[in-house]
Every structure is written in structure tokens, then in C-alpha cells.
Length: 250
Ligand code: PGA
Image 1 (cartoon, helix red, strand yellow):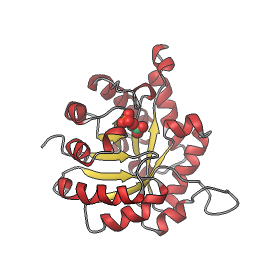
Image 2 (spheres, helix red, strand yellow):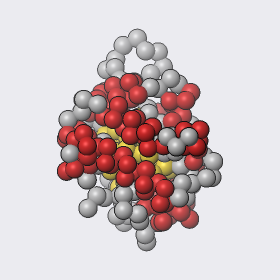
Image 3 (cartoon, rainbow, N blue to C red):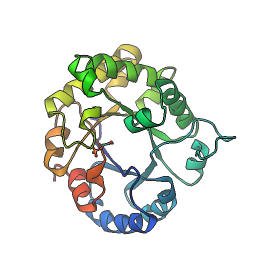
Image 4 (cartoon, protein in one colour):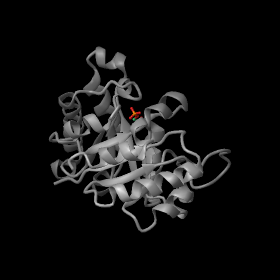
């Protein structure tokens, strides 16, 4: 049985003092949660969140990183830097980074490899646009993105990768994929992984759904056969709402 992994993606929200207050309020709400709980926070909040989440079941992740270890990359943060302060997870290839900051399948692949070299766990985002969906290309797009993202990884690394299927048209729009639709897309990703790395690997990979997840739809989504939790943006900004998503089955 795969465990559920539920990650919040705060995006460019929350000042350090707000982040600290959030964790203090959120911790008692989720301390008995069965799911793995992750908060992916802005760089400037990382250290405060790590300090305040110490000794709790809340894991902390970054939202991006560079693939190089160090060097002349003004404004960037390296995997080694994240690791050095105790970060455990990192989102890679979010559609907003692909759309606004030139992230490509190639840089996504490099970043995933760099994450593993630095013992960070990648949460890798894939997903189709509305145009691609309407042209009937959803499966082709998401299986391609998955194949290119994972290219050259060992079976063990693939098992340790979390994939977040996030249809772009569902992000921040209030439109959620139906649970059946999302589950089918995730099945397609899983069978692509099975084709390349074997069924033993594909059965272990955690594949989340993301895109307007909220407490009112989390249960239906997460109780399908193949959706192993969620990557949650807007609804992760309020501790109470996010705790209900984390405890969707409670
Ligand atoms: P949303 O964002 O939950 O606000 O739709 C999800 C994401 O972008 O990860």
C-alpha cells in the first residue's frame, strides 16, 4: 500500500512571522495525521519553518532550486544549500516555473538528478494545458513529461520520486479535474513508468493530484485507486483548511 503524501505549496506567500504563526497553529491540528505532511515554503521562510517544525510530523520543502552545486548564478539557491539547513523536499518543474521562468523538461531532469545527489526528495510536476486537453493530447503530454523528467534515473531513484499531476487549467482556477479524470491521468503516468522501469517501481511511486484541491473535494480525489495525495496551493494558506485536507478521511 502506498502512503498518502499531502504537500502545501505556499507559492510567493507568507512572511516569516506569518509562517511561524501558521506552523504553531497547524501542528496540533495534524499531529495525528496518517498522511505524510509537507509544507513547501518560500526560501526566506525555510529556516524559520524548519526550526518551528522540529520534532513534529511536518516536513519542510522548497519550491525550486538550481541544479548546480554553486557558482555564478546570481539569485539562485543550490541543492547543497537547501540540504545544509535541513530541507527534505523540493518541488521541481511546477507549471508556473515552466511558464514564467524558462523551466524545460531538460532542466527539470537535471534538477531531479541534483536533488538525489544531495539527498533531497523531489516533487516533480507534470500537467497539460487547456489547449492540449481540448486537442485530446493529455495522455501524450503527461507521459512525455514524465519520461523526460525521469530519464537516466535508477529504479531506486524513480521509486523515491514524488510526481504531482497538475492539469494547468485547474491550478488556482477553482476548476478541479473530476476524480475519475484525475485518476485516469495518474494511471496513464503510472503505466508509462511501468513500461520503462517495471511494475514493481510503478506500484511504489507516489503520484499526487494538484489543482484547486480543497477540503470539500479532497476525500473524493484521494480515495481513488491511484491518487496518492495532493499538492495544494491556495487551500494550504489557511492552517485549518489545510488540516482538513490532510485529514480528509478523518
Ligand atoms: P491550487 O495550486 O491548489 O491553488 O490550484 C496548486 C499548485 O499550483 O500546486
